[in-house]
Length: 179
Image 1 (cartoon, one colour):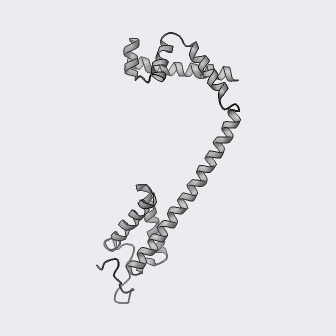
Image 2: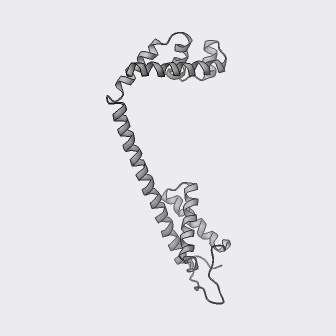
Image 3: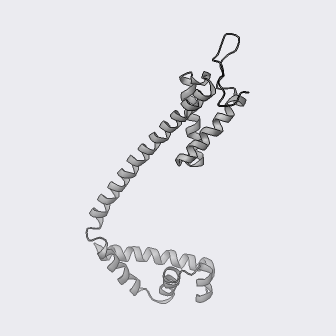
């Protein structure tokens, strides 16, 4: 097989053009396009998908029959175009999510969440007994359920249930205070 930078002849009647199924001849191109896409910033799976898309585009347009240097150039351009298209699409999606998040924030929390914070603090102050201790250990001190269980003399599953019930109670308390 000639090196990628060596010129080769185009297909002739006695020498057919390489087809998409000629894996051995196309593998060096696959590797180079994959590396190129990774250098552009594509994730591993994204680069694999975009490499396939670039080869599909080349096959559809009959560009797999080009000499190796021209084939590689076409595949690089096709891969870059595919990558840019996915970037544009994801930027539009991210912009839409950011805009909707801002609208939701302004609608749900007109005071930048200050009332919600005050309600949360007041509800946490109302917690007594093991519930108050467990919430303090878990969320203020960052203790694990095992550590909380040891400190409160409870089983680990009991701590899990206590925290779940306490979170539910806090949610209802905060909702009552912010209506």
